Length: 140
Image 1 (cartoon, one colour):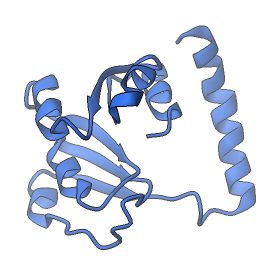
Image 2 (cartoon, helix red, strand yellow):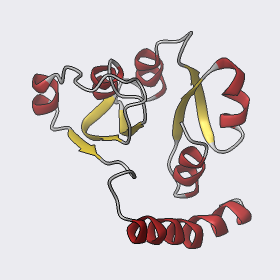
Image 3 (cartoon, one colour):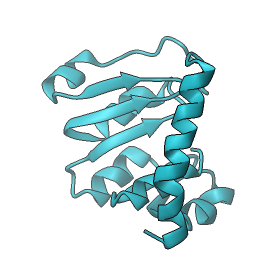
Image 4 (spheres, rainbow, N blue to C red):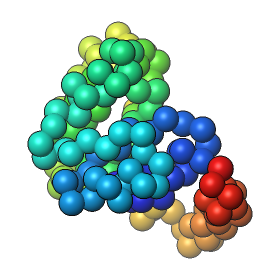
């Protein structure tokens, strides 16, 4: 997960649970994650359930996709949102558990920077720089 995601979410007041490899746990924790889960050693679905008293996360931002999609959906609270930002897994056609999506009133949002025009990308970077960098500097 890119490091700005936990920091930006934390700056907005969110409690952030992140996944990382064992070698990056401390780095990700140092930028605002309340808990960092070793995605190779731990079952993040179970850890999120425990951390949220079985309520689930409000939102999941996923850059990997593939086999993570059903697990991410199961990690959401009722009415939660999964934002699929990439498919680093290389699995372009994962199975979507529609019964879970429908029953729990979940939202699945897909987005990617590649398909956006240069002007739109520049505007996004400018908004991020103006809106979030001051929060990082102030520790907010």
